[in-house]
Image 1 (cartoon, rainbow over the protein chains, first blue to last red):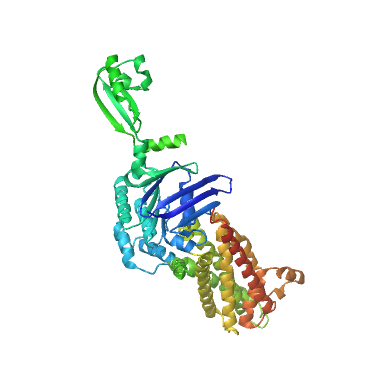
Image 2: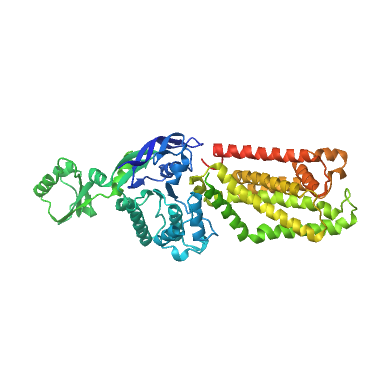
Length: 307
Length: 253
C-alpha cells in the first residue's frame, strides 16, 4: 500500500522551549486505520495539529497525498477531515447549518444529499434543525464528526473520538469508522482507550515524550510483545516458595493460594515443562491452571515505561 | 481562490447579525435617535447654525460615523475573537483557505453590517432633520472606506485580545473618546486655537470632516487630506494583518 501521509524529520519546539516533537518519522498507508497511542502530553495532538495546519512545524516536512502541507496547503488540507479532541462547536447554529458551513469552508459545492447521508449515518438526522447548544455531549461529538466528513475527505483524523462517550455510543462510532474505512477513507485515531486501538486499528504507533517509540501491525505487535501468564491454583496454601523454584521468578499471590508465572511465547523455551516438573518434585499440587495473553494495554504500559 | 469558503464565512457572519438583530441593528438605531433628541432637539435648539447648517443637521454625519466606527470594530473583533474563544477556529485554520480569504470573509461581513447600519441611521436621521447630500457617491465612498478600515482594525483587536476585557478595552478607552473628540458634535473651528492643533492629531477628525464634506460641502480639513489619512490607516491595518498571518501571532503556536 502506498503512503497517504508521510512525515519526515518533524520537530516542534514551542515558544516556551518545550520540545513537543523530536524528529518524528511516520508513514500512514492509504486505507488503513492507524491508532496513535501515547500518554498525556506525549505529542499526539501536536502531531495532528501540524499535519492539519493548526500549528506550524519547527523542522521537517509533511506530505499529504503527495502534497506538501506548507507549499501546497490547499490540496493537502482539502484531503483531510479533522475531529479535534475538545468539543469545539458553535452554539446557536443548527446542526444542518454548521455541517453545511464546513463543506463550504473546504470549497466544495453544495450537496444536500451528501450532508443528509452523513447526518443519517451518525444518527443526527432528526436533530438537523436543532441548535447545537441543545445537544448532549455525545451528539456534539457526532456533529463534529459530521463536520469533518461534510467535505468528503480521504483522510479522517479522530483525536480521542470516544473520550467521555458512553459504551453504546462508542460501539456505534466504531461501526461508523469501519464503514468509512470500507469506503476507502484512511483513518488516524488517537486514543487513551487501548481496547479501542485493539478493536479497530490495523497498525499501531506509540508516541512518548515527543518520539515515535514503535510502529507495528497490531497483530504482529501483539505476537511480538505478547507475554502470557500462567496462573496455578494450588490445592493448599503455601507460606513461601522452596529454594528449588526461586529461579523461575514466580509470584505467590492470594495469601499463598495461587502461583503466577509470566513467560514469553516468542522465547525458545517457555520453561513451563520444567516448572511443572519442579513443582511436582517440590510436592506442590494444584487443582487448576489457566493462561492469559497480555493485552495491548500491558504492552503499552511496558513500552512507555522503558522508553 | 476558494470563493466558496469566503462565501461560507461571510454568510455565517451575516447569519449572526440577523440572529442578533436587536443587538446588531436596533440598539444602535435607538441610541442614535436618543442623540438626536438630546443633542439635536434639546440642546441644538439653543445653538444657532454651524457654518450655515442647522445644528441638528450638522451632527448627522458625525453620528453616523460614530456608529460605523464603533460597530465596525465591535463586529469584526467579536467575529474573529469568538471562534478563538470557543475553539472553533481550528476549522478555519485547517481549511484549504488563504489568510487573505479569511480576512475577506470576516472583514467583508463586518463592513457590510456597518454600512447597512450607517444607511439605516441616515434614514432615521431623515425623520428628525431635513437632509440634503451634496455628493452621494463620495458619501458612500467614505462610508465604505471607513467601514472596511475599521473592520480591519477590529479584526486586529479580535486577534490580539485573549479575554473579553481586552476585547472591550480599545473600543471603550481609545475609540469612543477619539470619536467624541473628533468633531462628531461640533466643528473643530469652534475650539480654541491650541486645542484645535491637538484635535488635528486625532485621526477620527479627518474621517468625520471628509464625511461631512460629502453631505454639506463644509469641512475642517481638506477632503484630499481626509481621504489620504483614511487610506493611510487602511494600509497600516493591512500591514499589521499581513504580519499577524505571516507569524501566526495568537493564531498558531
